[in-house]
Length: 99
Image (cartoon, rainbow, N blue to C red; front, side):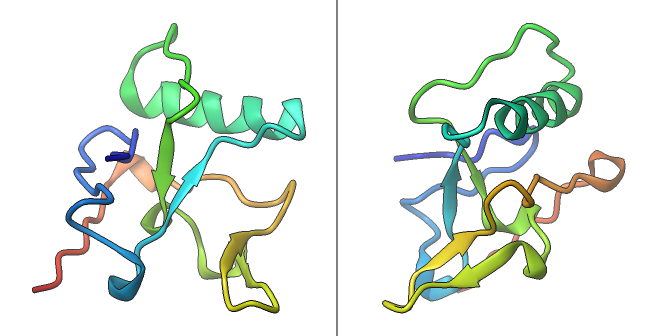
C-alpha cells in the first residue's frame, strides 16, 4: 500500500485509485539530478534533512501540475521525464477525497 511521502498527505493506493484521478509516482531512477531535485523538495517539506526515499517511496499526482503529465499510446498517465517535480507551494497539501 504505497502512501504519498509528502508531509501531511494521506493519499494511499488503498483509498485512492486511478478512477478517482489519483496516481502514484516513484522517485526517478534514470537521472540523478532529477531524483535529487525530488529528494530536496520532499526533505524541505518534511523538515527532515536526512530523509531518503526507499524503493517503494511515492508521490501522489496531486502534487504535480497537469502539464507534468502525458498519456501513453496505451492510455497510461506518466510524468514528463526530466521536467516533472513535486509542487509544494508553501508546503500546502491539498488532499482530494471522493466518495
